[in-house]
Amino acid sequence: MQQDNLIIILADISGYTRFMVENRTSAVHGQICINSLIEAILEQVDIPLTLQEIEGDAVFLYARNPGDETLWQNLAQEISSKLLKFFDAFISATGVNIESTPCGCAICRNADKLGLKIVVHAGEAVFHELAGRPQVSGPDVILAHRLLKNSVPGNKYLLLSDPAFELMGQHLKGDFEAFIETYEGFDPLTVRVRFLEEDFLAARDAIYSRTEAERADLIDNYFSWVERMLQPAAVAQMRKPIRSFSLFERMLMVWDSVAGLWQFRRTFRSKILAEQNVRGMRRTQFAQPLDLRPNEERISS
Ligand SMILES: [Zn+2]
Image (cartoon, rainbow, N blue to C red; front, side, top):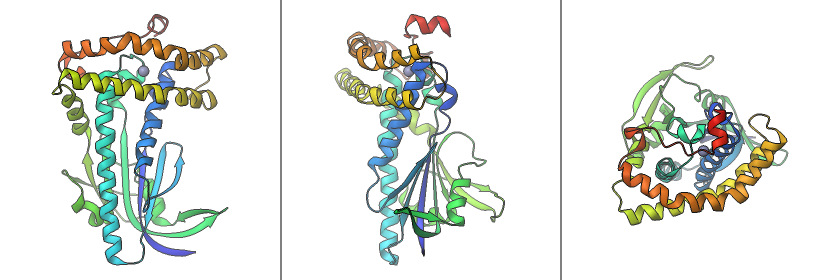
């Protein structure tokens, strides 16, 4: 066992459940959101970041001090740029998805209410192995997890504890607001929060400053993304459903993800572009999204 400095990153993906339970479509579409969030984070996971685990509603990553102050500072800078890359990629992709989806399920029509919380803490931990897998533990690991529950309003932000902010703050863009959090067994802790709500809205607005040809490409990419994500999400919901679904519903989940898809693309490709042209602005600024759900779902809700 060895004690070392480390940076801990926790990405919280809670807050999907209440929308996912509506029907089978929202269950699968929520699963797509969760999978793509995890995928976007994992894309940034490379040395020096280690994925500890995906713990239910959170992804837990850390980076260990290589034992040299200059290397440690460089590493902090590298992780900061990974965080920024992650945010830029994820936020712009989410913007396109929200403005392109023709779906009216609970997840898609509430996509702007889905959360993204990233908590970063720097401290010390004991490094050891458990059944051949590297593990970290100690008070700072506990504190990092507690920071997921905090007094910060809203559900889209990047939160750095003061020690993490000291290490990485100068490399991160944007304005940070200070909050003080108190947890049993720990001294009051100042945290710095960068709210991301505006970034999501800006990404959605940016779509409408593009040419029609560029937006047609975005929509094509969106469909390719749905095609790639839909089946694994349906399989995940079959294996570990958010609530119990009947056999018939589960069969429909598979049907939707296989046969329904090509029809979906054929029907909606030009409709989405036309709808965006008419709308000309972010859809929450304008009106509720069109209800394009299949009839059976419209009747049942
Ligand atoms: Zn949907």
